[in-house]
Length: 246
Image (cartoon, rainbow, N blue to C red; front, side, top):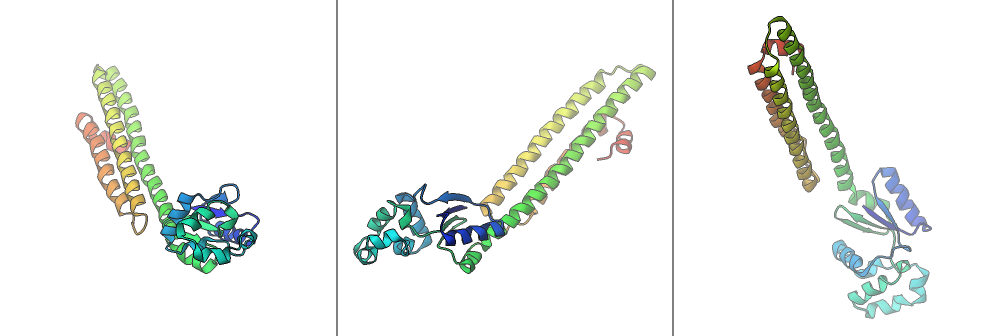
């Protein structure tokens, strides 16, 4: 979220303390260093549904010195926005923009109500991140099992070559094929996971972990089935399962 303030303003300091205490991330912008532009003000005023006069800092010295209390009633909305864009000290602060909210000035109760969707989205994002890492951990365990299986294949190859005179070429070819297939499955799985994450971001709220469970069910089962198919049909399946179970 974009938090626009005047650092010396006590109200802005209270708003900043509230955001920090609530754990809400924001981009801080000094209204003096970077004055809101005409286009920004037009978007914010339109999006807020508030009259343009609500965006004036009526308690400011500049507002009073320009006698704007008497002048504003005779000015059009566009003229007011052009005037606001000339000096940040004319603009009411703090401003908080993001997640469909445009808050002007700081009243804690109003901010708490307006920011409920933001807090819910943050909680959901934290759950999503945790679930994504859990799924990735599950998949890494499959890859680890595959690597262990590859080592077993090499051991089997050396053993049979030595004891039974079997050439190891077939095992090496199988090993390369298995590793290639595992890499393709991994890329497919992670791509699907990213798709779910994008879909979740678009909805932003109210989405449970069902999309991730669906992805896990689809791709984890495919990965396990593919590894078993390659190793199970061309090697001793019982030997594989007892030493490196999936």
